[in-house]
Each structure stands twice: as C-alpha cells, then as structure tokens.
Length: 348
Image (cartoon, rainbow, N blue to C red):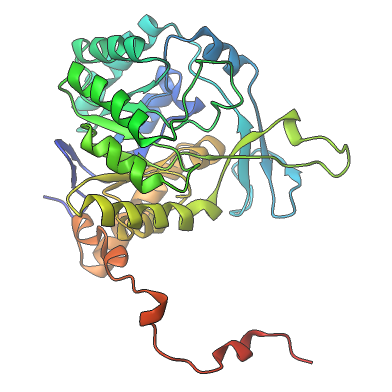
C-alpha cells in the first residue's frame, strides 16, 4: 500500500486528490486528460433533466479578479491570490449522451486504477431517482449527488438545487439511497450556518461520503459602471475559502464522528492545501476552479507536492486525517497572555 492510498467508504482511491466537476470536464478529452494526471478520481460535469439548467450554461460567463477587485486576464500566469467569479450551468449534453460518455470514461478510469464519478444535480425526487438508477445500470461505480449548488436562488425554478433544511436533505438522500446500491457521495452547500447539520442529515440518510462545501454566492459591485460585475450575483470561491472549508470539516467531523468520510471542496490549490484539508478532517480533496484556470498540469503538480510532503513527514495519507481538527482547543483553554493585545495596535 502506497503512502497516498486512501479509503473513502467502499471506494479505494490510489490517492486523495479528486478532479472536481467543472466546465473543463464536460468533453471526454478533458476527463481523459484529468485521469492521466494520476488523480484518484474525476467527477464529470454535472447533469439533470432540466432544460433550464442547460440553457443556463449557454448564458454563462466567467471572470478572474485580483485582490483589488479588478478583472485580470484569464490565464495560467495569474497570481496565486486571483479568484474566479462566474455564473455557470450544467452540461449541454442530453442525459443519455452524458450517461454513455460517463460510463465509457469510467471503464477507462478503471484501467488506470481511478474512477470517473457521475454527478447528478438534484431537480426533483422522481427524476433524480430515475437518473440514479440509470447511472447504476450503466455500470458507473460512484455517484455524486449535488444538492448544494450556489445558484438555485438565481436560476430558473427547478434547474438546480441549494438544499438548506436538514429534513429536506434526509428526504432526498434517503430516496436516492433506497433506489441504488452503488457508493453515494452527497455534495452540500456552504451557504448556511447549519453545514454540520446538513452533513449529518445526508450521512444518516445513506450518504457514504459528504462533499463539503459548495461555493458561495457573492455580489461584486463595479465602481466604474455602478453595476454588478457580470450583471448579477455570482458563484465565488478561491484560496481565501480554505479556512472556511477547514472549519466546516472540523465541525462536521466532531458531529458525525471520525469514521465518517468527508471530501473537501473549495479552496485547495496545491499539494500542501490537500494536506491542510486532510488535517482538518477530509479523507479526500476536490480541486476544480484552479484547474479550469491553470490547466490539467496543476493536478500533477499538486499530487507530486503532496506525495513529497508525505515522504518528508514520514506519514501516510490516512494518518493525516483530522489531526488538526482533533487537537483544537477552546479560547478559554488557551494560555494566559496578559496584555498581549497591546503588541498589535498601531504605534504613535
């Protein structure tokens, strides 16, 4: 067993790096390129049966912003603190075409000791259950059920889903879990103060791994035009979200227990970020927007950096999981540092 190998429920991954769902994983060539970087799994661009969700992709737009909220060129040489803001949608393929392509790509992934993961965006229960059954019948080995897209409040009714109520999460996940036997990963939103509760509801209802947490909605005013950038509320995420993701991981680990697999998303850009998220409780880490921006080689680079880190620390990937989360202390337990605050105020 290699130092990088990890077990996520019933799924054995050769390493914890997962290429997360995004536009660069719509075409089969993109999925193949991701698989050949050596990642443990690739999650294809999500689908459902909503025509409104497909139409939403055709209205999509993307921008890259710097630390001063200025739009900068979209290219791999962008500074590390640049972040993506966008409005997006689902794959333009028909469900049947998407299903055939994903099944073929998972067969190819198996030859590389990896996985091509199907991703369904919840629209309504009967439709989602039917699609999940077809995913299993096609022989695809893992299903990600996304109930935490950032866009539901901005999209056409029924196009995508941002589930914020634990009871509703239980209803949806239980319905899908009851319909299929393949490993089920559930992706939840980060747009709530109840993220650990949502994770618990998904886990209790049969989610074998919880992917947390989806990107946030943000409004970025343009000081020149006085309008919202790109005309609307946008999905936002970037390096700055890593501490938030790690906090949700730690809280969910406390609530669900150390044996419940969590998969991190939103904020990882490097191999050391993979380690940071695993220390916070993740069993595996998805990377999507940075790859869309900087290219598939980022996956290879991150994996190499992570493996070098494991070798340097003489530790295996499973041994990282939750160590920082489990050693957290309350503020009250911190040592007394009388008047230390005075060292951090401006001098005269």
